[in-house]
Length: 188
Image 1: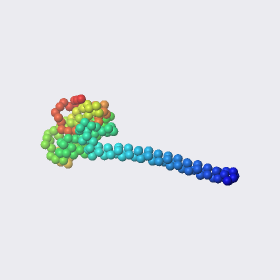
Image 2: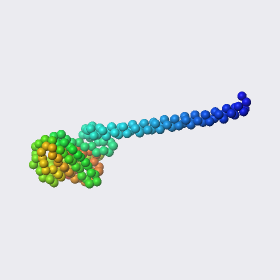
Image 3: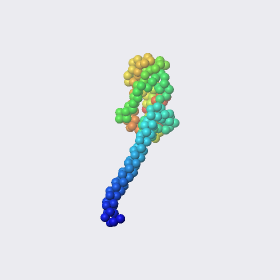
Image 4: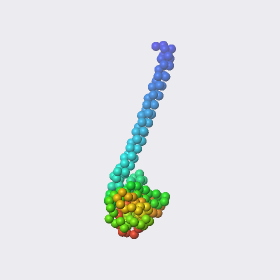
């Protein structure tokens, strides 16, 4: 092969080789990009799975054993009196800035103790325990904010006021029938 034909062959092969190297490098970069994207998607699936479990009550059951959600979400737990009969929880909210916990309960069966539910602004036999990540908890009774009817199908709007700092530190809310201890107490 003459030096001229070698130069022509080299000039022809060099761009092809550079093109192959660039396409190989971009394919490797694309594979790395796909791997990163796949890892991101897997993280999102794990996060969504934990949210679904929390909504379906799986995390609430774990929270009863002393565990709380790791993503900082507040876990709600209801005893049978509030969660099943004679009520159905229609709405729940915690407002850490205002230090307010609200419940909207639908009456599903006749109330055994209707005298406790008549006075708007009065205390009702349901309390909330706000448990922080460190295990300390505050108990507070709910007050009837709205609701005059006590027949099945009617709604009762309940509200509990707590210290906003305690509300902001809350990781679990346990709602149930009043235990009889002083309201607003703090326990370790």
